[in-house]
Amino acid sequence: MAVTNEKSISNGKKGEDHRKSEYGGQHHTNPWLFSSMIGFFAGLIWGILRWLFYELKFTTELPGMFADPFFKSTYLKTGWGIVVGIASYIVFSVLAALLYKVLLGRLRGPWPGVLYGLAWWAVLFLLLGPVLGMSRQITVAGWNTLFSELCIFLLWGLFIGYSIAFEFTDEASREPLGAH
Image (tube, rainbow, N blue to C red):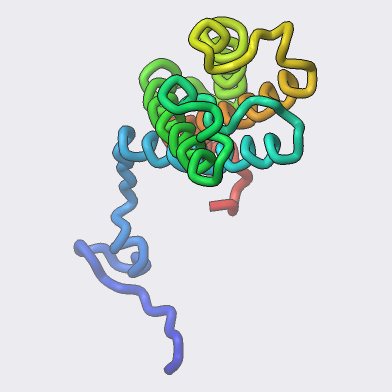
């Protein structure tokens, strides 16, 4: 079967490519569904990376630190506990992505996302985490744990922030011509 490059006539316009007529030139993304999807994948990717960092002894914080108030630490160290921990990180990430969309969704570029990740790291490791028993106090945690978790949260925030900014602002216009 030969491939032809025929032009179709749609909506009374001659010379319009058939693919463009199917697309219609309009793109509408549901912001809540998209933000939830970004949060899910952020939680999955960075939750697995947190587990890997824990297994490689870069951090002493359990991958299930968000489930720690609800489960015993001995359970969170088991295989199913790690699954629960990654699932709790996914739920946290979905909620954080929705919050990002509400608070910072109109900002452009990667820096708001990086600062968002930094803010969550500060809340979880400096403010609320030690108070709620989710993380160790900063004086006890150790430099490897603090820097490893900081790097993960910076990249996690960058992933959420830049993905949302790219979809809902005109970040695509900053790409080189022909990249679309």
